[in-house]
Structures are given as structure tokens and as C-alpha cells.
Image 1 (cartoon, rainbow, N blue to C red):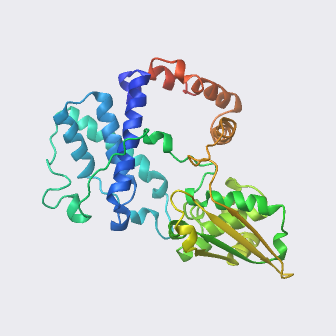
Image 2: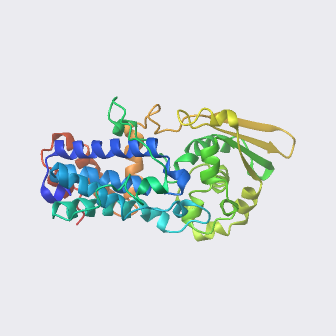
Image 3: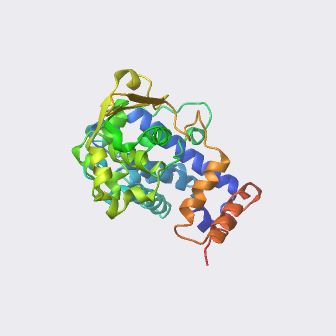
Amino acid sequence: MAQDIDADMNTLFKAASLAYDVYHALFKSSNLRDKGIDNAFYVTVSTAVGASFLLGLSRESFAHAVSLSVVPNISLGVARTGRLSMWKAGASANAARNGVFAAIMAKEGLTAPELPFSGERGLFQLSSMFDLNFEKDQPKIFQAHMKSYLCDYHSQTAISIAIKLHSKVDPAQIEKICISTYWFAWNEVASDPSKWQPSNRETADHSLPWIVSGVLLDGDFGEALFTSERFNDPLIKDLCSRVEVKEDTELTSLFPNRMPCRIKIFLKNKQTIEEYLDLPNGHPDFPISDGDLNQKFLKLATQTVSSSQAINILNHLQHMDLMQSSRKLFDGCLVT
């Protein structure tokens, strides 16, 4: 949208920061996950707010945009439970599209229910009443968590541990793998039997047993873990069957300030090897370095474009602070 209206960069960054603040406030205040509503709902509302800011909507139109983002767009949490589908990867993109659409419709004069939250049969009757508490410290965009590895965020610490353990253990000698973690991680990536027998990328990249088993075998995390051939690989399937994942209440008490994981490997010779980590690389308290971020960008981008094109785009993005026009920012990312 910023590109379309040629917003200046300062306005674009303000809109993005505002969207992050709204997302964070909704997430912290509403607890909608417990009501079966997916976090893509937060994306829709926050995107509508950011887009409305970009469009310079009046107070009245802004309110209509928020309502239009809420009323038609309740996202069900079933998108991220059990054996996952491709929709898991599309849910937030669809939500962002819906947020933009809400802002555009409000700009064009479409009116919306005036009480989307507290009105009769509004959101509060599905969930419960909550107040949006905006924390008045630094913008929440600076507290965003970044992933080092392209999979569920709650597997990040376990991956780093498994990479370290790879050099210390012969997978053929492993009798059992015990993974202890906090409740939310267990619930997200290890509470369903499908996590031990994934048959597609969507389930496998949200499977703590599968990911840890693959990294212990390979010594690294990568797309090789998610090929159709790998889903039929007897080595990783056998190792995965020996993985036990459990909640440790002590580790749960550390979440969300920490994201702790402990992996203990029992060997056939009765020896044990254990590693612990409580912060993934990319956590706000353990920021990912520019070098690691650049490498991640190039590794992913070169799956689609040539190395030279990826490097050119990266060089362009690294100078965005010198740009005035957001259109110039996005035009510089075009691939011909």
C-alpha cells in the first residue's frame, strides 16, 4: 500500500510500528488462543490499523476499518493443530490481505457495525471482555522475535542444542532422546501424535521430534528435512520414534521471558549427554547479528532468484535509511 500511494519512508515505518503495537496489545490483552481463535486474527486487525494510518483516514473511517477487520475475519485455531495443511502457511498472508481490504473499503465509504467488540453477538460474546492495554515503553516492533531457522519459533532453541550435540554423539548409539521444554512449546509442536509421523512440510516444520531427529543426523537445519524422500527415510523415522517430549514446570515458569529447552540423550552404553539453552538466536535479548541475517536472506532468496540478483536486492535494502520514497524501496527489489 505504501508503494501504491508512494508514501514517504517515515510514514511507512510509523505505520509498521503502529501495526506491531496493535498486534502486541491484542495478543497480550485478549488471550483469544484459549477461545480457539488463531493469531492470524491479530494480523488482520493490526494490518487494517497500519493501512488506515497510511491512507490518512478520518477518525470515523478509521473506526469503520477496524470493525471491517474484526467482524468478517475471525480465524479458527484449527489451522495450526493436528496434521497441518498448506493453509498454515497462508493464514497470515490472507489475514494481511483482509486488513488492507478493510482499510480500502472504509476509505471508499463502506460503513461497518459500530460495536464489533462489545455489541450484541460481538467478539466479546465469543471470547470475554478485555481492555487493550498499550504498554508505553519503546515501540513493540523492537521486541519482535526473529527466526534463525525456517520453522516454528518454539523449536529454535532445540535446533541450536541439536546442532551442538551432533558432534558429540553417534546417532546409531542413541537409545532415547528426552526433550524437556515449556508448556506452550510442548502444546504447539509436540502434543499431537502426528508430530512423530509427519508426511508434509507443514506438519514437519511444526514437529519438535522430527526436527531434532533430523538435525542430530545431519548436523544442521535445512530444507533437506522436509522432502518427500525424507519422510520415508527409515533412519530419521526410527530416531524420531525414540524421542520423548515433556513439559518441565520449572521451564514453563521461565516462559515467555525465556524460551528454555533441555535435551538429554541416553546412549546404548548407558552414558548420557545433556545440553540446555534458554534463548534462541533472534530473541530480543539475544539479537541476531547483521551477518547471520544477511546469510539467512541470501540462503532463502537464492531458492528463487540468482545469487547476483539476491546480492543486489540485499545491497539495496541495506540503504533504505537513505531513501525518501517507499516506491523507490520496493522498485529496487524487482527481479527482471
